Image (cartoon, rainbow, N blue to C red; front, side, top):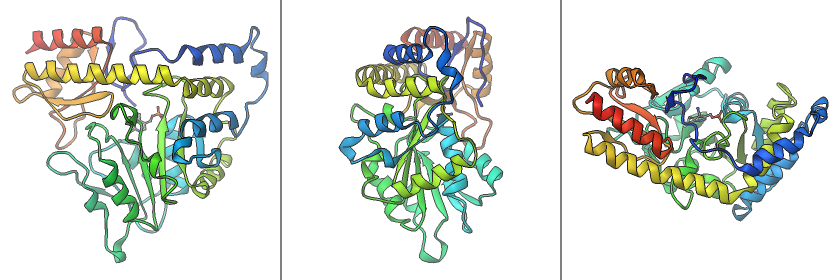
Length: 348
Ligand code: PMP
């Protein structure tokens, strides 16, 4: 995982956390759950986290989602892990992009899932046609983040749908960790779940709901896919979500006003940061996420990352083919973005 610094004074723009606090209603709900003496913590939590499944289903009723369509886990990483083990392991290799979330090949290694990495095009885009294979060589499954990480690029919903309809015998997992930053109208593939039984959409409360420290993620899909995930989960950990996490997550899902205000503030700061960085000569991929992926034609990315660090600003640099001249920078508060710009101006 990305580095966590705990001392004050650092501007931490390296792990795509939200710069704003979570919903005050979520904080109050966790305090209420804890009570004055913490006695509730004597008892195990609800193993099925039914209240949370209800709250998530409520949030997506306009797409025909019911609690039976919802799986919850200890961060979306755990939800993804169960999907690799329970839904993506087959005789045939699964497909995911060559530049993508670094955990996918790790889960494949852990669970013995064969995979093939599909190259992004020269503009760093996922090309839906590359995931449509002839009958004789259909993949065992497909997974990709949308928006992709670390590029921030969004694949339009119609292209997501092409991948889903082109692989009717395989599970297609769309990892939408950052989708809430994809526009005022959120272009989520949850809108397609009622139509396609092979689609699983994974979300997290770590980004748009500012709860990375609480560890809550969920998946939305056909009840039979959810049932498969439940069986893996019940063979692994009966209580992945603790009492505080369930209480806080329910209130966070219900506080739509806070969610909308924060995600819109982040999107606004993102556009301002992209424009200001362009004035310094940076080229930034169009981002639909709470981070940007930027390079400078005249300055080495690794050197820039070190120079920023000397100024107490941490960004992410991946020493990987094709992207080693990029920096991935999380959108901070406006104050943090200004500090970043001032530091970059000085370094350049
Ligand atoms: N998917 C993607 C694409 C991510 O970038 C992250 C964050 N590292 C996750 C999933 C996992 O997030 P979490 O476990 O905090 O829900």
